[in-house]
Length: 205
Length: 203
Image 1: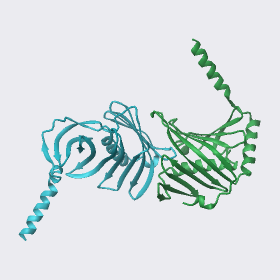
Image 2: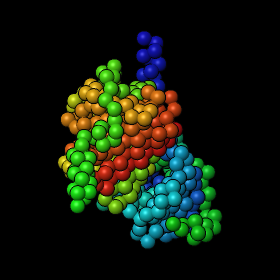
Image 3: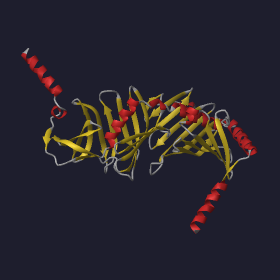
Image 4: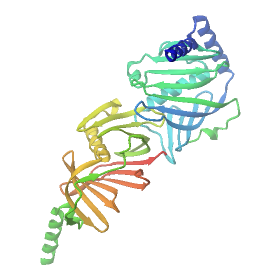
């Protein structure tokens, strides 16, 4: 009985921990992210990705680096446990799969592009697009969690929802992409460096 | 002229000869009643591979995942590197279910090819119809989804499966870098059309 009470206590605590924002708070978050974004020209960040499939015993963990440069140069580079990078440049997706270079992919382009737009937009601060997404705002202590539910029916068959976490400064700390099956990919950003001079060579294929 | 005719006959004979004859297999009264494939047999293990697929002059990568969920029950999924599911199948006994497949790939012909390949890849046991030997290999012939398959063992270790149709090898599965019943590298090569899958274990 004690155990159940203890459990209930924790469930209610966690329910308290994530609270929906008032519209004033949501507006303030949007403004904060936008201000932050306007002052950002480059971002370098490490990331750790957790692919969760319900039927697996463990999440599949991979690591890498993200580089961003205004207006829309983005490079995702996985370094562990495999070498793989994706570069978005001039509306094209360049893939380097352990030395095998190509600029095509199977069907995932649209998703990657959307996700990329979302990340780029979140860095730039204009991601809160009510035409594209149903958006819900939550606060957890001094950080924020925003749900983006794609309105496009075709797209929502790929990704049911994006959950983006922001720290108190308005930086993206985590992206979670949830598939219709509830399996998800969670990407956590660490060691973020802003406005360091990034030569174009970083963004070559 | 006679030589030509003889050669022609010889080639025709060889051409029509059965797969075991073409490959010089010696029939054997083997004691093994079932084929065995240990490479996806551990329910405790997540089998995760980096995949490189060359299909019809296009090349792409992804993550190939196999999980044994119970007796003759496997789940096989393929995702992009970033984690979006391309396809997700369940094999349970004789049943096959598509849990999910990208709309662009949702073609019956393609799904049937993948179903046949993956069924042969994961089938742990299958009734032996004939046994052979060749060099240091023991070769067991069985049927999987009504197609002839030859399982090659060297030192009792499975290293190749060949699917044979009309006496010709149509698909070969090669298992290499084997450590404690875990094949770290697997190749699935189709010979009658351009489809090649190379798998490399992530851990």
